[in-house]
Length: 178
Image 1 (cartoon, helix red, strand yellow):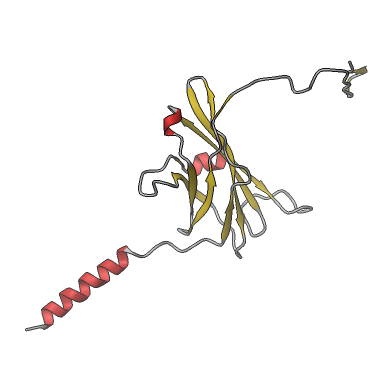
Image 2 (cartoon, one colour; image 1 turned 90 degrees about the vertical axis):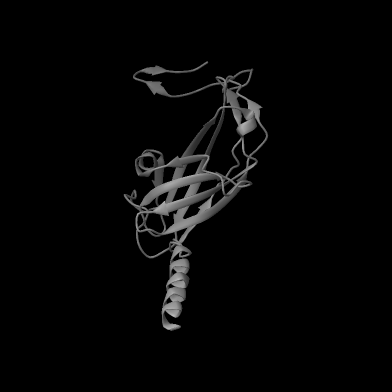
């Protein structure tokens, strides 16, 4: 008489354990080398920055998905999500010095993902961001929490200061100078 209850209890416990299984952690490091600074331009607030993903494992990885989240609201939806096609378009692979240009995120290679987040107002700018990267093999990595800098206005200015300056180079037989 107690046997069906034991089976039901075992089934419930195993279903609960399966739902708590997380994908394996990918052997990568996630780094944001410079904090993003919100810039107001054209009626929107934009964050532009880089996420570096370095493969420290023993096999190649393929970027599948990136979610950028508000670090203060981890249960809210992502601030922005990039799928495989956006990642392929916005990623530059960098090989170790002296190595040939990489074609994949292999051990020792760094992927630089260029992130562009356009927000409707300054009120929507998160105080800090965190990143979740999923790879094609089902593994994933979390991290690279970064504090968002103070907001600023976009200012366009000359790339050189006042005073005497000279630039050299040649276009055909002409030399450019001032």
